[in-house]
Image 1 (cartoon, rainbow, N blue to C red):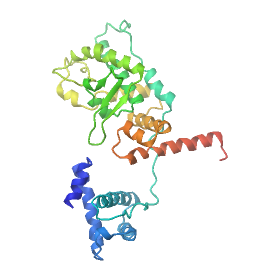
Image 2: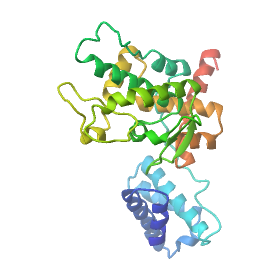
Image 3: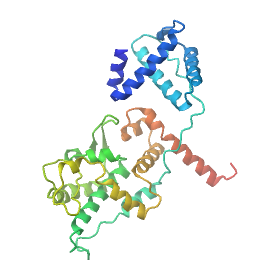
Image 4: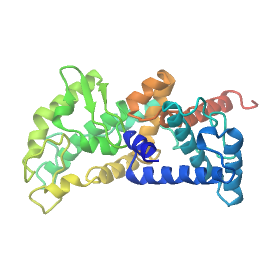
Length: 315
């Protein structure tokens, strides 16, 4: 099993996931040992018997579906190593596992409004003399740029936090998003209005944020210190909530339909699926596996059903 473990690790799976997947396969092999069946000779019949065995043990459909998915990986690995010619799980499915709609979708107009209606006060605002105003304005400048990247490029909150100044390729009209354990790297096109907005932020406003930092940093998006603090510490920079809590509250006040930023990303990816093919969307979303992208098709089908209900109420 050591080579199968290495195969899983090469796919970027976490140590905990590798341990779980390996234990699932070993359990299946133990089941086969009862009839002296080597895993290379296992057929769909043995897999079905194993799934029924798990059901008798009280495992729910959702759990058995996960186990079946691991066995698919295992048999694919065996094929790759020329230990077998077919995958006996390729046509097997666990019935009764319902995919839930990820989030209520925001349509294109609602997404645009999140960005467009997020206002930045002018420098000569009547509140400009108050001691909190400068930090407040800087926060909103940064937040508006962040919103633009989430709505047009579908960035997740961790990806925004990891962006650095070198990730901006403004001359080429591109932005680079580094990969992680969960996502692939990618390079996405910026809209023309975003390039201007990002140039203004990166070359003008970011200098003002740097005055508040206690050390050097190449983070693209920076916090300003809380009221009563003179500087932002290195610890502040590692916090994942330095932007999102306040921005979420602002958006919910103005847009009751807004739930959270996962809803925004879900909406963006679902809209992409209406415009581009599955592999293109997989790349744009940074998904390591195409089935992650396919899961968003649930939302697309729900949208289609809603359209049918609206236009054909008797359908």
